[in-house]
Length: 159
Image 1 (cartoon, one colour):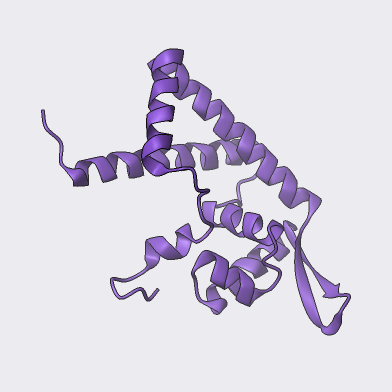
Image 2 (cartoon, rainbow, N blue to C red):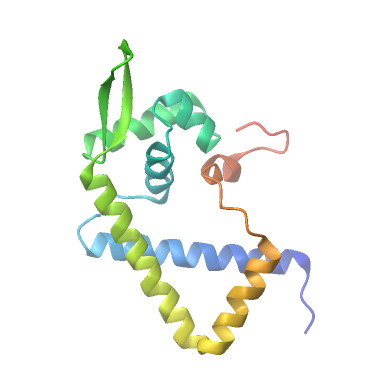
């Protein structure tokens, strides 16, 4: 049976979605019922240096207002704090809290467990081949944090 290019894109998206949904459900079982995928993208961007709503919006490719709402949720839940900027007293910088880093580490461990499940389903050699081929097709570049904004973007590039 021949598949189309659209089928391939949907299979890849389905794999991504399946892993993310399973990880989100497992995080909830482990006590983090309030974590959503966008929260992880945001915390990773903040940990990498996005220390304001404007920076976070640019990193996630979302409006500043959307970034501000995400920040408010993360602050309320204790995953991120606002600290005074040592160089500008008028400015507050975002920092991921120890709890936020704990959630990210827990999520990483869950993804490792999900990877092992896939490896068991395909077999070690077949999975290594699958992963290697996928890496060859996708490239060596890291995944960007702007996936939430990219997914919501219109054809003209607007959110």
